[in-house]
Image (tube, rainbow, N blue to C red; front, side):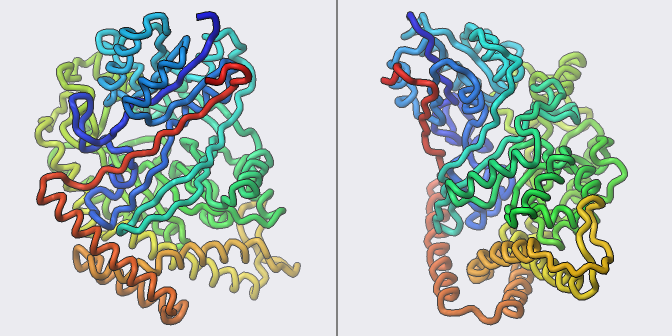
Length: 566
């Protein structure tokens, strides 16, 4: 080959379908249904449209002509290889190593001159040489590695990635399609939790891609103008830790009267530091918090009243997704039940509860290798975090652990109800509280002090038009869930859900009046679709098929192809 031409590819579809290459349960490309709203049946939102973001980030920053082939079928992958690539980079997680192996063997057999580069979380597997043939291995940060590999300066400033694209969202059989935008302010996390693959992959450091609040605002504003997006996903391991950036971002939003809203990941100590009033003004719609375990001593959770903090967030309309880790070394058969109850009792809107999964490259994995605790015979493709653990635990056998994971999700539904109902209730209650407090502040002369990040008494007249925009956005968010109440009530799995649904429905009526003809028609239509969806689900279960597994659409994107297009 006389030229360099790179193919960056994720492992082939389908996903979450049991084959000789992959486990079924636990491997769906659906974050919500797979591990957050797990066990909630037709009440579980389903989404199509996720992306392998790292591949795009590499392609954005290197000069080599590159194609990103994301979520291809086997036939699409093999057809793409015919376009004469000098290099193929495959990204994969440990659980997909057999798929990566099949792809690499195919390249070796049919395109022996093509160089194979492996990356992703699975690149740290100790016995990878025996599983996936390759020429190069990237176990750390991929962009700088690729720049160095292709002879470019690894020290140049990296371009951040903004991904806007169509996503399909299904609930009760009703499909909506919308444009979703994910923003990457930076890579990595300095917290250094021993189990975290991300923090170790980036050397326990943070690599900024967006360096100021004004820069981020310009990106958000551009996305609004080009795609009409005002709700953003911030793909940063701990977004709120970048205090100066988020403070400046809020000031820019206030200056331009743009009440954007965000889903982000954040640690508890950063939320406490910035304060809930700041979060409301910033537009924090949903936050993913690592609650880990009641007994763990991570710095990010030290001396924090998690239950009080979560309650405060939710009362202000901020939805909370809590993430717990089971089968840590301190867990035994008594305290793990207590830990599950503790996690459920935090009353988050959503809960992820997975078994500890030592990932190659992490301190936890190295520690377990040193202690000879890893089961070397346990297949990588079965290490889902939902079933058996694959390491020696002082109190649990692997065959026992899947039952505890299942129990955690069942207890959440039994005590806290359905996540979609929790989200609706939090949205409505938050809208009412924020609106009421805003009106009270105007009457009593309290203004927002951006330096102190709090409201304070002032003699200066203050109308706060930005908060009026924020309140309109909160109202819109609350109202979009109203047509779901009839369906939730009819398909309520327990009394907790039924009672909460009746309370929420009553609160909707009290706040906005009785539903009009349009809302009633929407409610009846959704109920009808839910009946059909329920019948389909029952039929599939009777036939031994389980839930339908949604597949992400394949996406092919070209970069830097002035003269080499095929």
